Length: 424
Ligand code: SF4
Image (tube, rainbow, N blue to C red; front, side, top):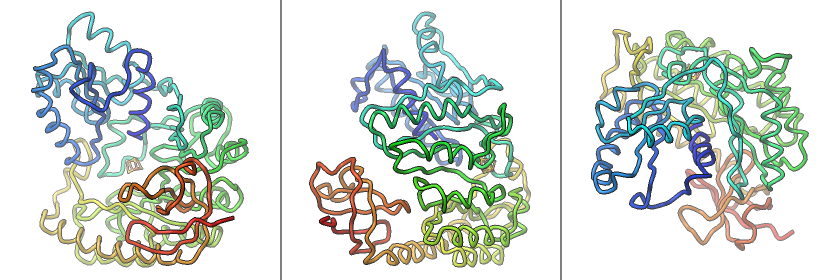
């Protein structure tokens, strides 16, 4: 979502600014922030500290902080960082031109963390030449999981009108785009509160019909709200890629209840079986938190067991980090940092085995790749993703970038696959 918001900032300000790679050339320096964990918040302050010298050398350069840390901290950030010009919250993105004009005209440092009950008017343009695009379909969340800061910094759940989403995707496809990822904190509840009945699977159905859309993905999906209609979509909608990110967070029922997740491990595993029945070979990724308050060794082992049972193809895992305003931050039985670190290492080991096994299962298969560019590691090789979201690198001519090609999988590594381009 932050990648999308940063792209929107670049587009909204495109009339007055162009992007530069060099901070020393910048007239405007915006930092888009995340507050999902304390560490990301600390990084913002440390970056702002390092920018003090640049700001002294270039006093005309405007320095702004946007996103979730800005939303959470508001005016406190201006007090902490005297060389900061502007703090704009998660909805302030769309008011940036006006905020910058006011900053220049009044010479007053500004804070804008206002929330409107409506979704902001998302401009929805695309960067020229892009193959892939994120499209916001909803913002905010009403779930209040006890560890999560999102409802406080992104506000209540609001869905974007279908017509706006379809128009944004159509324009992108008209410019040569191929792959769309729909974004929302809980995409499954898309449509609640919109005039006229529309569900998330129905929205997928509308988009899947658009000519030129090769791949359709979405994130994030709440396991509690994963409907049978959505599961069937994986079998019935050709552009919908065979990959789902389904954050489980913990494999222990007492922890899931304290997290306020609204499902048990049995419910989660049952949904995983349904997905695999409806769409054999679907790749499954997840998010996991270790060291949530009250997590015992036996709870943690339940998580390790669930990982094996679900056979996750990939996972993002984090140490629990208390966040301001959230219920779990005040829970008395916080887990010591050393225990969190040790559990994280064990969890990583299990996931590495599962990820490698997932890659190995593809050996010998011929699969379709959307060629995205050059490999990050070996920049003479081309790189892309399978529909299942596995990363694959292979030799081929640069002209293939942007095209869909077929490759045979030859090598399986921990984080990627090696392949040979098929001749036909
Ligand atoms: S559903 Fe996701 S975004 Fe919403 S509160 Fe829970 S973890 Fe946070």
